Image (cartoon, rainbow, N blue to C red; front, side):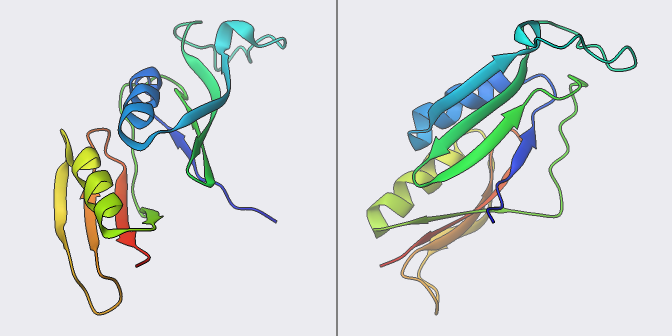
Length: 136
């Protein structure tokens, strides 16, 4: 059994994919746009733009994050959870924290805690909340 997050960016998915590729080294494993769907869309839920992302699987480190434009409402709503990003070194934790902070909001500055040599919390520019920690 595997649990993988599925994030709906409501129209900003391409931008989010490029951001995570640049800042976290994410790799696109698969990407399908609405126009590539072999099954016609449900009449109650047609995509607003056939070029928007219907489904994408991003590989970030050893984990997968699935992403989509969803219904393209323009209003992503990420609440009630945080993505936890564990890295091997303090330097990598600092780098990832700075990258995700770019255009975002720092909730807890990265620093030493009783459970990790580097830990911090940030909400990125898309509204996704992250916890970054070093395994060192």
